Amino acid sequence: MSRGCIYSGSATRVRIPAWGGKSSGKSGTEKRRPPPEKDRVYHGQDLSDHPHDDKQDFQYDHEAFLGEEEASRFDELPPEESKRRLGKIVDRIDRDGDGFVTQPELMDWIKHTQNRHIHEDVNKKWKEYDKNNDGRISWEEYKNANYGDEIADVENKEMYEKMMERDERRFKTANQDGDMFATREEFTAFLHPEEFDFMKDLVVTETIEDIDKNGDGFVEVDEYLGDMYSPAFGGTEPEWLKNERQQFLDFRDLNKDGKMDRDEIQHWILPSGYDHAEVESKHLLFESDKDKDEKITKQEILDNWNMFVGSQATNYGEDLKKNHDEL
Image (cartoon, rainbow, N blue to C red; front, side, top):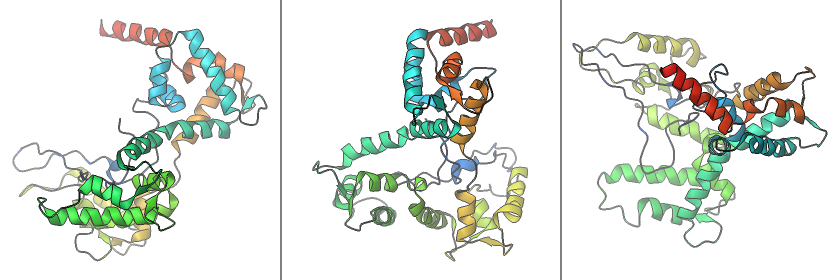
């Protein structure tokens, strides 16, 4: 599952290329669709791959509230068991034990469930890299696992060396005590730097290195567009690219000097403001708060249980609807 978005600078041996569409092959004119904005821009963790359309189903809400894997497990449960487990979850969400779930409590729960994928990713890679099982991952362990002891015979040696240097710099930045042994928290920052404030300057640096072709430390409009689009020989500029050019002039280049500096790049790729978990928590509370006191009881949640969790019954109903629509 691919959720949310992150700049294409992840620590990995296989680089994620900048977006590239396919030519329509029509008389030299590119008909590429505009690149998805999430190629570079990090909007925070999206909560589900499903559309958020409650008139169709509640799958988005289920995955937002439970996480994708847990939502799938609930889909296999009988309704009564699904409701029973939901009640236990509500007890955990109500941290102060006052009998009410507030919007901040609900938002914190959603963020907790949505961060599971990060923890699972770290746990998986932790087992792969902590070869001596000492509860830490050294740079040497990571380097040897990813690049081997020798890269002299590797094809495209220069590219590998640059990738290794870049990974080492990121490892050092994440390793805040400077001993080059990563704790679990430091290794999480290494793998998912966009999630940590102290790593965001490095995220900007890596983005500049990817896009800044003339090496002046700035991103000019042609470099910005070139990260999205490679025109065919003799091709004309598609309409969406003209719109992106105007976006750069109107909204990216904030000081109007014809290029993006570090602050402007951070404003672009790491925007602040939109919080998926906050929006979803307000939505769930609004839909369940029958007495409109801006907090919900356990009973109010259970009365609206099929918005929070699925079951065999809700799946059966959705299957019936789908089968009916297909007739």
